[in-house]
Length: 105
Image 1 (cartoon, rainbow, N blue to C red):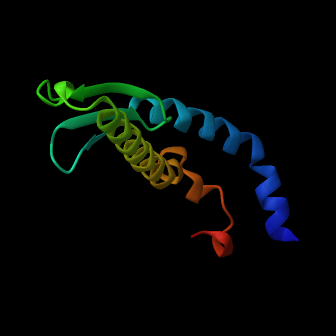
Image 2: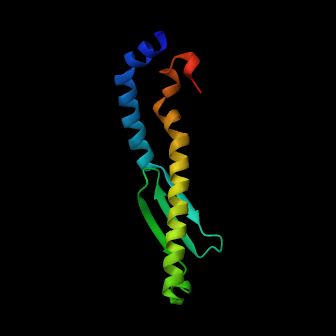
Image 3: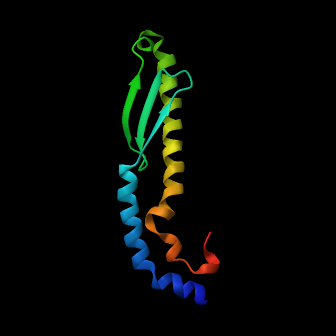
């Protein structure tokens, strides 16, 4: 019961820190390069696509191959951004200091 009350007392501070962490995550970027190096995707950790670069020679290839590769590589970039965000939120928000000691990761 004491642990729950401790968490509730810090709820507004936690909410403020999480909002700040979200802003910082929007500024953090990940870059995914396809295995063959012909495509580079940049996304923010708030899961917004920032940039897609495609080798100009590859643009002349089969449209359906390019479309399928785009979907695959964009999804890979977004997964990388999601992982980075999940790893970064506790650090950016300073959550460890708000959690009761026995509930800290």
